[in-house]
Length: 281
Length: 258
Ligand SMILES: Nc1ncnc2c1ncn2[C@@H]1O[C@H](COP(=O)(O)OP(=O)(O)O)[C@@H](O)[C@H]1O
Ligand SMILES: [Mg+2]
Image 1 (tube, chains in turn yellow, purple):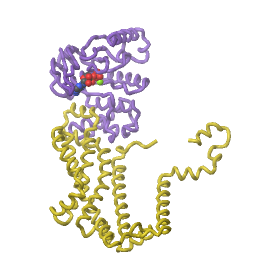
Image 2 (cartoon, rainbow over the protein chains, first blue to last red):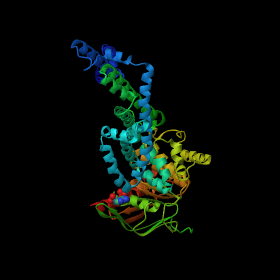
Image 3 (cartoon, rainbow over the protein chains, first blue to last red):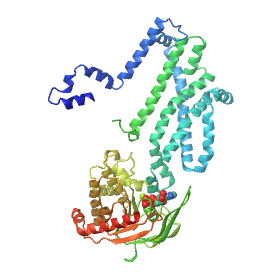
Image 4 (cartoon, protein in one colour):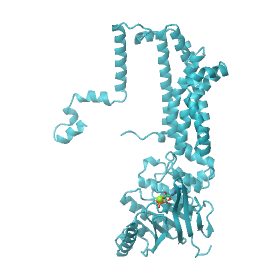
């Protein structure tokens, strides 16, 4: 801003970059993507570490970052992999199942106003039921194993998918629906060739929300009953007062969520680049 | 099919929509007749039922009273020989220009043959988009997008072209240019055109005949034959007769609006 202002005023003198040598570094700092959040992150870690040492905070209240690093060594890499895989497997199976269920439901809701009026309140009731509260009941009903955990994951992920996909299916330009009808095309092609593709941006925004919800669902299920998984590991660690270990588990969990979120974003960027919002100016 | 038989005919057509706030009478007693290969423009205040006129012709809706006929047969459902161009191009954002143009056949039959693609490329060239076949809609200007919309409507080689304010989203210069291009296409391959517009000068410049509609419930209040020589071009806009037609229509629309 100020740079272009300067050049407009003193267009005959030296170029603006040369006139302000000190600016370029701070400009780089502020403008390069990722630098600002990374710096903020490092600063938080430093303040955290310093506070823990300075105020001698007990590690069961808040372990210092260096102690948490130690927590990673508490179990072997192989055990870590088992925990990660247990959580990831349930989250992914639940997620995929949830997508498979919610797409047809959304198509039905978008097509029929009567069915939509009949089913929607039920969906809202399901969504309003706290998953944490219903998880133990589901585990008792469905026993141990992956099934109850997958069901819990589905319950938590499918609502945003249904709502967003339905909205997307209804947001198709009416002209294209008229075009479809004027061609007397079968309804199935109206859905597959017009409505579903137009819903892609809506579907992906829900897919991004749901993939992190899927991890939450898996962890909630593990809290209730499990002998493996990151949720189980965190709960087990706290019950043994190994708080730095629990923190290590938490960090792995956060990284897992981030990776899954980025994976969904990448799928959209690679296969559906047209569906991304146009570049910010 | 006799030569005298009109392409589009409305006799005493009325259209009442049932809405949440009661019945809405969009059209009342519409009588019109459009000859084969005639270019007819329809003018009228917004909300008077111009788009409804197009929907009735295309068979997307059925009149609540009266009869709409196309080539002598009452319209019962959408026909294959009618192409529609909308106000907004409404292209498929994920499909390139060629795929957008062949979309009607893909949508209707589920597959696209090499001949379809060859056909599409000819039409794309005809609307002045040669070389842009592989571009996505987002990479095109508004005028170019509407050219794709027109190419898509021409692709099934319809006898009748219904156009609902097709150029109203374009800037004035592009709009005029597109009008003349439409005339060139129409002259090279005559079709019956029903062209809805808000612009009086556009209607006069393009059409053989201008129909003026009343405010709602809409009916035809003026039927003005535009006797200007073809082919028309920039020179046409400067002719005195053109100004007389425009002046007459403007007076009529202003008087009705007052
Ligand atoms: N499907 C519909 N249901 C209810 N009202 C409609 C419908 N289509 C059009 N109308 C109403 O009919 C009137 C004429 O609409 P339209 O033909 O779109 O006008 P125009 O194209 O001249 O602006 C408007 O008042 C519009 O709100
Ligand atoms: Mg309209």
